[in-house]
Length: 283
Image 1 (cartoon, rainbow, N blue to C red):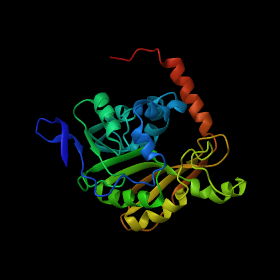
Image 2 (cartoon, rainbow, N blue to C red):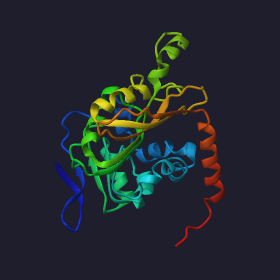
Image 3 (cartoon, rainbow, N blue to C red):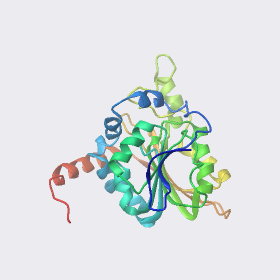
């Protein structure tokens, strides 16, 4: 592990490059293109444009789902990017750790977040640098949608160890596998174009159902899921899964909701952002 910059009063590295045990996950669609881009901040901002910004996504969607477990002692974010969402999460965390596969993005996050956070360059699969049992809340948004089922499984297995006994995880991931056959039937070539507006880079090997099947054997339990689509084509291409530690008790069926009002939620968030953006913050 190579320390790059930043130290706490106790001398602990706050921005570090973890020695990757494997190369960055090649199955993450667009990973290499993203890493080669110099406009990583704009790329990160684009993910929040439908909401009017990262703050609107946080207050309008994510915070209501995490309000029962925040503030928390230690929050981990998988796919921190340029730190836009992290700047919203950080006030709710005594300690914040972010991991990402793109060093350029992490340097952007360092500029935005300043000292007092821990940022780690990982290989797109590993949480080896996170102490076991230390994470109270894990959050991932607009990162795991691009990776395959094996990569999601790798993260689940590690989260089962990294989460504290009462820890939770809210993961945004692909649900495209639910629609693979439907998309192939629609396609003139019988194949799926991963970069088409309908697919939007979502990985075709992953679904919400697969996560429900995989989680118990890896030490986690899915408590709730929301399925939704990020385009106007009516497909539920995405899922947001809320996971808790699996204590080995009786199986409890998760609450699964298909959200067809996703575009409406985003429009309302943008409207609120537009109306109230000029209101000065309370000091």
